[in-house]
Length: 498
Ligand SMILES: [Zn+2]
Image 1: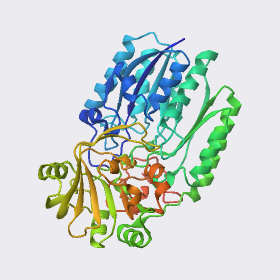
Image 2: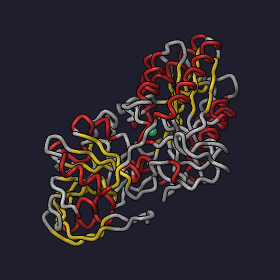
Image 3: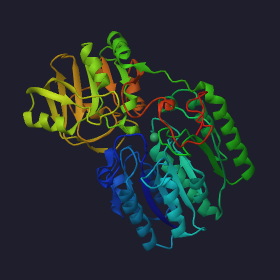
């Protein structure tokens, strides 16, 4: 039995997004449990598809004593404030110090956190944890598939293990994989051999989906290797700093095999550059197609990828909603539109009332504005429910006041409002408002890829839509200033000149 410290801090930072992640954002959690200090973190993450939950279960099963430090997550957004970072990491390291000596550390990290002061948030967390426990205590971390993995993160940890599925249906499983690696290190009493390589091109997140090639084949190869624990992190191509990009890395107890497996994986990703296609549809054309092809029982799903709250959007742009109303779409539902003012007004007016709304458009995203119109309040909700889909399984949502509105100008169009940001990746978000998603003809979802886990099985087809939003699907469209020189801004695309 060993004494293992458990902690975590997850944030995916889109440095081009409109809002910062301050301390209240980590208290709210954005679908994740709110910030936790000490032993209550075990119950808070327990039973959900969360990396720490999988790690905790695996380490308990192995008979270890677990010591809680701190755990927190917030919705993806622009930079984490210095105040939030220092307060949470200060607590994590403080709790860790109190519990020394420890035999090992497990951290639940994202890998793409940028703070107001620090480009490499996770590299800094690992530096402080390493300084606290010393060089001889193994430190392992699980990472999101969208991690922008840096050399500092790689050097300061003993092992890092990233998700292998996008949608992230394997978050808890990844935590467990990291825990098993830590356990194996403790059992053998020796360090892992390791290798890491980076890539020279960026890929848009819609084309990183592991249900489709090339990622489907790449991850199949990653899983096939039983000698080395391999990871491919396609990165989060919305963080303007020199380490933004894709990486491959691996660990094992046979140095030669680890090096050759990581080299092979690197070659696979180099060769896949031409295969990362990105088919995007403009909102008007997508709605036109969905109107003719969608039918109750087999809806067409429109993915509003550029306003995905899971990639830094605020979930309040109105591009697709405008097209649905103008084209008088039938049996169409859009969600979740994040607009606490409109949700509060709907609750004040009550179910059945009709009133004028200025929906969304609050983030002042380029090319977007509020949508004015009369809507009938069809259903109200308090935003508290448990998700059931493969990705958000067991997540206890607290999305604040929610409301289902029906457009008076175009009565076939309904909008699901929520007060707190979360991407529309679980059917329960609609059922909470009395909508059975399958019965619609058109579902417009503010999500890039995660929705595919729960919605693709009921969808006739999926169209990825380019409507105004801060999470640009084509990374070449961002105004980059600090990337690594020579980085191609999209597969086979122009290189960053510096
Ligand atoms: Zn991710």
